[in-house]
Image (cartoon, rainbow, N blue to C red):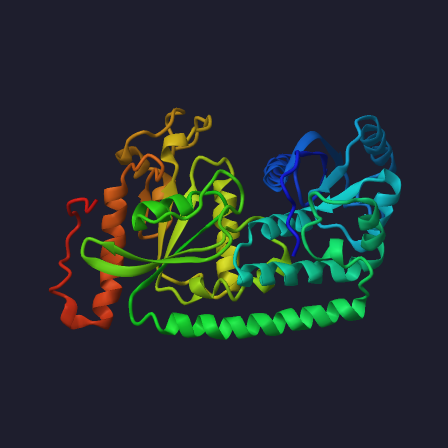
Length: 406
């Protein structure tokens, strides 16, 4: 697959709709996330457009009046990229392109494009390429003429730029070949997992950009890539970690996101085998994000899809240093104050502390409450280890605290 070289940020606008299923408040959250996605992909958002509709227009997604407003802005401000918050049908995309005469990207392909940027290993690149081809297959006719006009930039990383003359038969053959290639790699990875022995396997899961890689680096003293962008980690990373004197395997996985493209869920299910075959999940949550409850639900939905929802789980509420409490109604008995919860004792009194048997509040970046976190992980890993090797019980004492091994 082709990757975009260093470039200036593209000028883009965002478009979303308020419907019976999606409130104005919810749309604003999605648009904030879409803007972050656009920034991650390499775009600067100049303006947002939204419209209230009972349901998206089947021909142009938004109404004709709003489309005229968008077209005028695109022409006046020389906007090259228009990004829609929902997946567009092939017909919608073709119709919109004719009107706006700009590059049209929907949320699905924007995410696929970011994955194409982030994929480092042959395995990840193959998975992303498969997802891209499956997305492009029904859009071949309209997309190829569109690609002839637009060179480079967001949405251009992948098969499109070098396969303009490809027909559906060749694309289907390519999809078949990629699936066979993934199946071969899957067998190799399954063998690798089998060769790791009986060490307890712990997997970091969570929404994208919640601090999983930062936590991975902190626990394992490794150097996993981490930055404040969505999907900073795409390739699965496995490290052998020792907490106290107890060794186990820790896996950092790709972050999840709302409205995750079906093509990616399917092509990355094999990568998520690391999650499915783990013994313990560390569900990391960015507690400073205003939509962290939705993030938890989105992660749980995907865990359910890959049959991992019932695994033992430690809820790790991260970024307590960045938390800003909202104003609460006086009738809310859960909260009697509007300022941030600074002490651990106060955190333990919140409703978040009742999200399962094992809950911990930390700041990975500032290393706050990491000792309690390690202690909890140690206890849970020890329980699993001792259940497999009862004769090792005296090697790993049942303790709650130990000296920091740094």
